[in-house]
Image 1 (cartoon, each protein chain N blue to C red):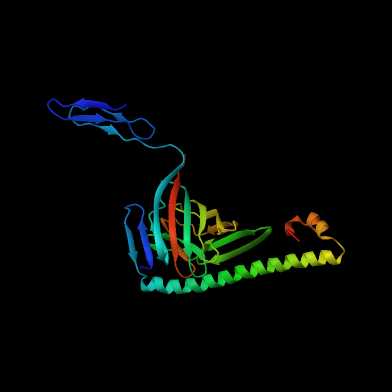
Image 2: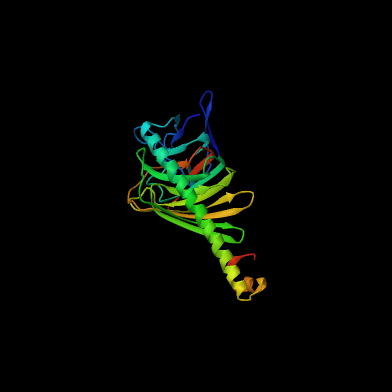
Length: 205
Length: 79
């Protein structure tokens, strides 16, 4: 409920409640005449949008300062309308603008109709976590566990391999270097990619 | 078209730029690695298909019908 305060001559001040839930306290001026407020801490559980970007025909997307101590876990969503070249997409964790290029391992489980194929690779210089067939549109969603904590980072997610055929890939990735990272680089194996990437943080409580 | 789009999540700054010399060298290595990974994945898929066909043919050689094979080995899918 907004509260309107009329000025002595002209004009007014309107106090409005916060658009989101929670209490905000506005304290009256103290003896020095200053107004002290307590900021509203949004502690509701759920996903918090951190950053996102659309891109066209790029060879890499570098996202800096997206992983912080604010959240332990993150959700990354990639929606690619085109991946040229090998139609494979990789990521590397990064710190202060430099990619980590060792200690990745990944496992995928690829389902095409009634056929299921599995593959694992270790000691990689990057993590394969997304693919499409014939450069077609594809979509993937991944959870990152503790990239900004000084421990190994695990990633698990799902993606379409062939959108028109609903072929599914389940991915698991681990990066075993116990370092706190603040960013991620996403890049196609060869050629370029076009699409949108969004990153969200899971509130810790 | 720039090689890289670089996003700073804290400030909202977005920069489009080309590879540095060091990044370009890494990029060339990445392309080779990606082609190798794609070949390994294709080989794994091919091996799985061949193993499936081999299992079906062996079961048939023992006198099992398609319906019996489906019941005994549902993981093989459509015969």
